[in-house]
Every structure is written in C-alpha cells, then in structure tokens.
Length: 306
Image 1 (cartoon, helix red, strand yellow):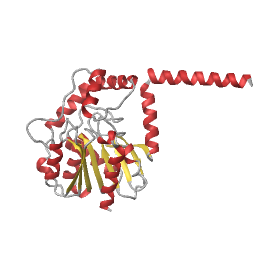
Image 2 (cartoon, one colour):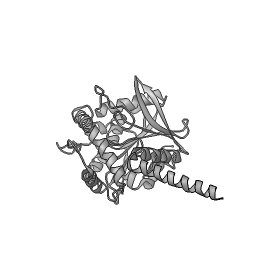
Image 3 (cartoon, helix red, strand yellow):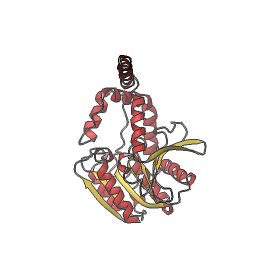
C-alpha cells in the first residue's frame, strides 16, 4: 500500500512539474492543446489542402451535404476566432473556419497577393478545392472586409454575407488599418485589450509574453501585408457593396474604437438586403466577448436562408 501511495505522490509531483514547465517555458504548447480541445468540443476537425502549391489550413465541422457557413478571422488572428460561436451550428450546418493567407498555420511567404481581393481569391480557390458551390460567408474586422469582397466578386457562390465589426467601408480618407510599431511589449498588448474590448481577456503573463514574442517576430511581415491591403484591390468597398444582393447580416459591437458604429451604418446603407444587430456590451471582436449570442445570431441568419 505504501508503495502504491509513493507512486501516486511521485506521479503527481512529476505531472505538476511538467505542467509548470509547459506553462512557464513552453506556453505555446498549452495554448495549442486548449485550442485543439475547444475545436473538438465544437465538433470541428483540423484539415489542410493544397491550393496551387500553398498549404491551406482550416477547421471543418458538420455534414458537407448541408449548407456551408464560412467565417473569417481578422488581422493577426487565426481560425480559432469563431470556434466558440459555432458550437451549436455544426450539428445543423457545414462549418468552415479557415486561416487566411499568412495567418495561423498558413505560411508567410513573400510574393503572394495579400490584398483584400487576393485573400478573397484565395478563399474562392479553397471553395473550388473543397467542391463548395455556394457559401454563407462572414468575418470579423479584416475577415469581414474579405467576406464582403468575396460576396462582390463571386456573387454566384454567395448565399449570404455576414460582417462583424468589419473594415472595408471608407468614410473619409483615413484608414482604420494601423501599422504596428517596430517592437511591442506586454504593456502594448494589454493596452490594446483594454481599448478593443469592453471586458478585456485575463490571460496569464506567460501566455501574453508568448504572444508578444510571436508578434515581434512577425511585425515586419504584417506591416508589409497591411501596406498591400491599403494599396491593393478592394480596399474601398463602398461602391462594390452596392452590387451585393445576397441577404446580409451586419453584427456590431457598439463600443468598438477601431471600427466605430458609423461603419456598420454605412454597410447597412450600402448593402441591398441587410439587417443589422448592435451589441451594447461588446467591442471590436464580439465573437470573443459574447460568443454564445453571436452564435445565436449566426444560427438565426442561417435558418432564415433555409
């Protein structure tokens, strides 16, 4: 009995040590494990396909014979952005959450077209590769901008459009896209959270530091990508939005200082067939702050198209 007890004490000590090592020294492993569990709990499986020699990663869930809902993340984010919001959707719909080019697990390669039109073309090729003829497409921030460009450029493939605190509408000559400083630190990241969210996420310091390290490694590339966006095709969607006739849903966190409510109203006015829902208690990325409520709006919109 003492031998068994000693074994369990030893096992507990070793496990605690390993968890501590992962948490403080390799937090990226912990983040990946949590994200994988969250995706699995939402009925999503990670997949990848080759698109003209470029490997594209995405989450897929639900029955491929059902209507397809594809949701796109924002700048510097990845396919995990909408995982919690689609928990109740994979049972009834075919759900795709892709990494945009140069985001998530997709490689950052020079020479590719990272403009909004280029990202939309990439999503179009993903649809072709997966034999998807029609899609309800949506996204947050730059992902919403890309979704709107997809809807305008590929109307025959667009069953519906969802924009969530999306860039793309230009109300003046100022761009809402902001270049990163040469180097960021924990204070920079915390200030961003405090600004962009009504209820800022409370990440442990090792996780925040891991994110800071990632950002500092990627900043030169990301700033170059932003430059492509601002100088590329479909940066300004005002006129093109008027050509989108697919049913559209405009979702907006009212407390967004990055893309304020006036941009939502512009989308509502320019889209031919749009409904708008505003959330008083959310900021730039409502899918993080109020994921269940976003999920309910997504489900209601999908049901309206059945």
